[in-house]
Length: 520
Image (tube, rainbow, N blue to C red; front, side, top):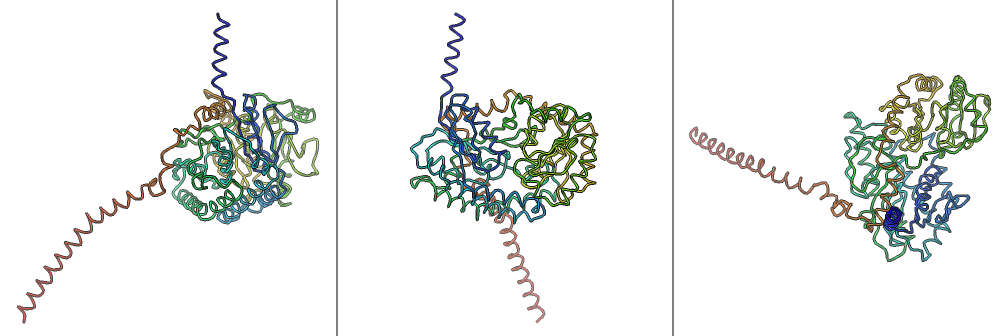
């Protein structure tokens, strides 16, 4: 009887999980971004779904029988990306408004490269059918066309967490008094001047999006996807069922979210790690005072920084009593007994080792998340994008020290390293945040799987979407109401004043006339 009930329970559980055909669109040519998508889609494949994953980074070996890669091989895509990142070291002082225009144009170039790619064109012209499309959104709204092309539901993925253009697509509130623009180095506790800068930056970005960015994305959408499709404006306002946010309130700040905004920060970090390569393991375990791990991420090529900055960094690292493992994209002349230099390193496996004491990073959200999940304080050298904001948050929460790239000298970098290594508060705080992040009713990957399958089970779960999607900008912001209130206030206050003024003027004129008549 017990066996019967167990079998019945398993049968019922399996029946609740429908096998679906899911398309993943993660075309951004960044290895770290693709790792997020791959983690998600391998897990979906293991759960019985048939998945097709479109990205520039296919697996060398198929990870699961239900998993299929569509490899983007466009050289222009990588050229556009490398031009953007290679100029980042020189662009730290560039006006952000000029940078925004450049990003809009460069992302449009990358989207054209992706959608004209041979493998992508073959997929678009095929008779494939999908139940769901999961798209990484990074100012690439033209990719909503995949949902229109295959007539499937759309889930968005934001590797940067909550950002304005994602919120606009699902009509979520975003108070600028507490939510900082991702390219500013503010926290959720802004002064008057910081709020002023935040509002001006965000309003300017909105104007640039509506005047320049969305028209460009709309042209790309119309060019590459089938003729009988909904308009770009319709897809932009109504097509997103749900968005997965690569963050968590223990990593970020408490935010005002809609029901279809799901935090899954840390989902890509595995519970167990892979064994370290022998040489790396021996190097770490032979370090009497521990190891400092240094990586500026998978996108930046640190060799592109100036010789002066490079000299400051090397001088600071050689002063440490700790050994250093350093991810660098070319050969370096250093003391190999104390500093190990590699072009590629298994970052998460290294951070998980107990003898690694500190992580020197660019402050990207993925690196910051991995650092917390592995309980390592950080020294951040933010270069571009959301990195300044991430490091401002790390400093506020007391688990990181920031050194702005423009201010990086041997003195400032050495101080930051020693501060993070010797002041115990950073380790105490990162351990607290790690415990908060892990203390969840569902682990992030389980949560992601539940909500993806929830959208499939409920045919898009459109009941989770706010009715704000049906309102115009004027209606959503109640500008028409404010206009009526101002008109009434004008009538109630200024009309009586005007009438009284007229009456007083008339009386005054009559009085003056009588006075003149008496005098004459």
